[in-house]
Image (cartoon, rainbow, N blue to C red; front, side, top):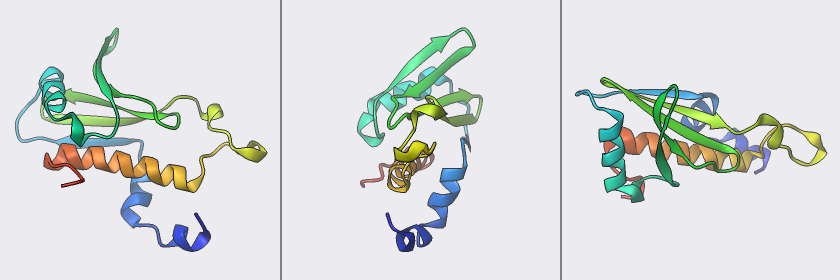
Length: 128
């Protein structure tokens, strides 16, 4: 991606790249199991695979890592929280020892994250 493309990037994409957490408010309370069941019914809407993970500090829906980044979804009452996960910042190394992703990789990741957020907000797939 060249400088011209970078400077013409959608402001919504830039904003999404800077966030590591997104909160959604629902009209009705939902449990994590109910949310997972709804997501399982229409897996094609979501970019990547996900699973329900239960641990010592609670349960969450975890998306598979893509380019050393992933997402974790939690539900509590009427609030759904989506956290961006980074496997290890030192793993994302490019040539020259720089500790950052290439811009086009980051833009691809952000687009897939926006697709998940949009699917959860609207209930519609980005493709339709």
